[in-house]
Length: 491
Image (cartoon, rainbow, N blue to C red; front, top):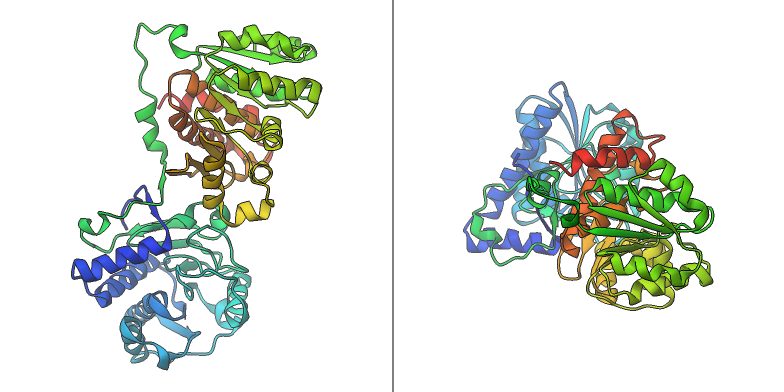
């Protein structure tokens, strides 16, 4: 298998790549199908060397055709293969029909039963391909549920059946795969939303198509691997001083919420900001200074007192622990907007924004799906149904750069999109969003553009979370993540 490329495509774009390979570059479709099936078979044989009984589930179309190739190669290698076909064999045509005919010359298809799934050493899912755009029902749903209930390892061909290759959303039900080899172009739905729980390890092979096939088709999104961080976080000049790395200001921490600004402020400092100020309620000043004396913490009980701090700051974060007090939180939000500084907007500041929408070109918004839903005036389910559409709509409506948090965080300015891999379920705890706000703020203070600070910040945040989780995901705290930041921002 090849190294994972950064380019991610929609299913329609991958079909265009297939078409270009076949019709423009002269690679016959049956050759591509054989290459895909052989590649998947070799992966299965290497990943599960002791497997002797293999269940292959085939649907129609090219996905089923790949499955027929796998079944034939496994049988020719001497394995016991149970081939189950959930489509009309007689109706199969073209390359898939030829692959089915060749498989059936050495195998007799069997009717699927849950017992076959339970008895298999490994299961091959070639039921539904990348074109799925509606919920799985009927016999296909029954088979998928039985496969999941069997608990045996599954290799999904191209995409787990039932998972949208376009959005990463489970459509009714979906196969939970241990590994997913995918071909020609990486499908963007394999890297966000529900995919983390269904795709398993994603591997890639371009099937040897000519490089020219990819010209003229702009990827729908890009991965952002951790190895790319060094491009944005170079070694500092030896003569550097704190004034060269910006003055970041965090505003928030209403009564009872002082921890949020402390986390954001410390994350900003640990990400490399030269100076970090925190504006919060007076009662939070002493605890914040005791915990992190490097921060400059000021009590702001009257919103009009924020003006001198805003004047000194080069970049501002508003929202962590800001609360919903109109006389304090909303007025501070208004003051931050009026200051004309680059902004990072999170938490309750996003809720104030949803109530009084405005657009700006120079800010970074960092909503979770619930906040995104309020900003778009829709349900959280609607946001999660198509995270790519949601993040694009947010960027178009509010301007700047949007970081839509979640499994497979998305970063978009309305024209381009980054998918942030990494992160873990341990990060589903209080304060993690405040830490992300601080990281983005700190990077913005050091001179990164809004786009760079958002994408790099999200990747740094995910990597720090993964390092912190080495001792276990359950019980992971935002402070544990912050403790890892210095190592991540010095790649």
